Length: 237
Image (cartoon, rainbow, N blue to C red; front, side, top):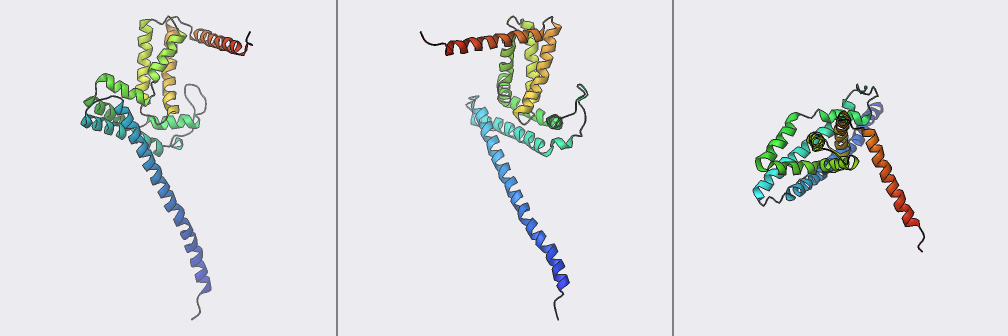
């Protein structure tokens, strides 16, 4: 019996594309597994470094603290990766009226991470660390932005009062508290910007003129740079 040419052709049309598609799926899965393994290794290394900086001197305690941090970092990463900006509908920022950009939508998506992720981090750290040590770990997450930003306020407002300093520091620590649940430095900086705005509004409410103070500071910085450049470029006598 002669083969049914039409049937064979139809089967080839179906089978060949399926065979071609099988390889990319397998390759993509392998790439995804490799990326996850690399990310896990990076998380482990980061957590180990943060714990080592505390010099706890207790291997069991170090292991517990490291596990708490690793678990939290992975939870933040996995939430971020599984909630791209497209999961947030396009729309406007109700404060500014401007359209939400891609970055805005990603921050909104990441902000919906379950509260238990943060609670588990804080509860786990407090079991083995002092309040000061807990703060030290949170500073690692946010690369010391509390102290760095507060130093900036002192530079811009040299006569900052103790009350003003305490209030601004409180804002910045709240920023740090929230920022640890975001995956990257761009998002962490965005959270700090919210509380920097609060700090500047607070200074205005205390009779300060933040814009004038900031302009005076930046003008002085430019003048110093210009003077230094002129000195460097001046011919030797």
